[in-house]
Image 1 (cartoon, rainbow, N blue to C red):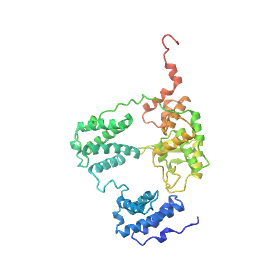
Image 2 (cartoon, helix red, strand yellow; image 1 turned 180 degrees about the vertical axis):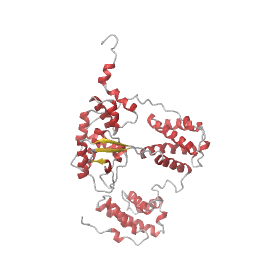
Image 3 (cartoon, helix red, strand yellow; image 1 turned 90 degrees about the vertical axis):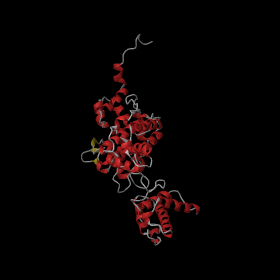
Image 4 (cartoon, rainbow, N blue to C red; image 1 turned 45 degrees about the vertical axis):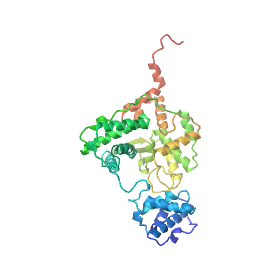
Length: 410
């Protein structure tokens, strides 16, 4: 492709950081940014480098405060534009990849509570093999507990009492409002207290003191949409565009194979075995499940990979359509795609997330004569009891169990 503008990096100031401008510009090009965006970014970072050199600021000492001060100067000169902050944070991480913090609110000093939390998260990753999303959920809850119990002071787990644990659970559960969120919090807290005992920092068995949050798992009914509505959802994707091809393949994976949103995000090119016709789903603790790859799902994936997926070095199957070219940011991105598809198809669904299609698949299988064991195998439920909730929506079978109303129909 012919370059239609002068390379701004050739005009970089002769400062100590100017050599990194070219590296940053090349990264921008590789990530799929347009020529105009690359040109604007190069001008911005060149100006930032000159600003740093004028003040004698070394790159290894760079902080978010310096970025904020520079942006304030640009604001006063009426030169600040949307996206400048994001661009400069990216350039700063290139200059100081290990020491730079994008948020100026967090100081350079790591509090004892944060250090303890980081050690716990590493334990969950390396020794327990938990998924990244689970570690993040556990970390949020344990972080609140440590801050509540110790603040910025030294973390002394040996001084924790059952009263401290119970008081925190009662307050945090009331703040969370939702029983399932509270359950995650108590599960994370039990795991952390067991971890403390495993390390010898806690002598008493405090994890048994964590109160149980009332939440009857079988009390609700799975929220679903009909087969015809699922078809309308899929038909609403514009398969002539890159975004439509991607969204169609993602929605088909969930509605035909019951993948979770996080599993769609984590799916890599290496997980597609075209020779055997299978799809590998990688779970926590190095668990790998293999699912057959239906012809329609395979066709949709091939169409997206050949005509919709942008060329990049990222191994994830599903990539952001717009620059930077990287994997989707998380399960919430998949749920947003499902929500937009529901709006396009004008479907008034009981819920709007990606799990709606997973529940709908199970219900359709049950209505087609599949057993609960077969549904559990497709949905990859580790506990068969989880699948029994779908028995509530099998109205035909439940009708045979219903007792006649005393006195007959009135």
